[in-house]
Length: 121
Image 1 (cartoon, one colour):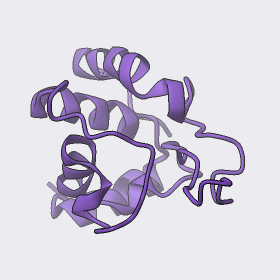
Image 2 (tube, helix red, strand yellow):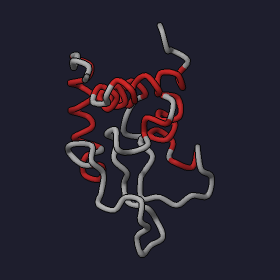
Image 3 (tube, rainbow, N blue to C red):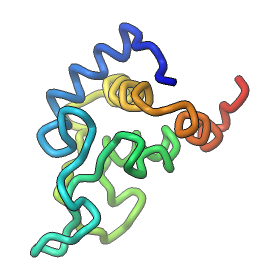
């Protein structure tokens, strides 16, 4: 079961398509072979749909990674993903996160909610 999109999800989808989809895909599918390192040693962009691992992280972690870069969760890890603090506000980043979450099946949403401490609210 998917959650119906709200107006906020529409804004989040527009922002996602503008800032994220060139790497993570228009349908949140990520880049091919996203778990296999590139010649540079870096990993391709992962999917944000239920097949990826985005739902394994809390909103707070996702906000920090998008805003400040992956360095916030994995010091020293090299990635092609830029930090978006100079481009997107926290509100815009949360709209993107909310859009991504709106596409997940109930099981993934429920699991991710437990990481946020909001399960059952």
